Length: 169
Image (cartoon, rainbow, N blue to C red):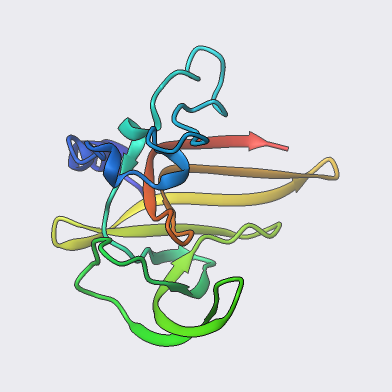
């Protein structure tokens, strides 16, 4: 099980402190950036994403349940756990295909009936930090997640805390 209080205590003070370290899409330096949590509930929409964004080591690890193993493009300069696999792989940048380093990670899964607990390398060990599950209720897809969520989109690596989504249809 995930000890959310323990994760919160370990994350204290580790949030991104400088705009230059923010993912570009959420940075105040980006004129079209989404600096605030405009996707949160009213009353919380003016919370800056910077105080809920963390540069915790990549990759994420599967602790239990289902996971989607993937090779994702490595983001140079992003911190890495001492446990990782990297290999050169083809990547299409929109113009040409070239070989770039990729890191192996385990991402959460979202098909109906699946669940997973993800871990982060923190304070010398892999710690459970994020849970997600998807169910079908009354013919609708119900998705729920909570914890410290990994987001490893190229040039957008970060972990979000607190991440509490759902349950929603």
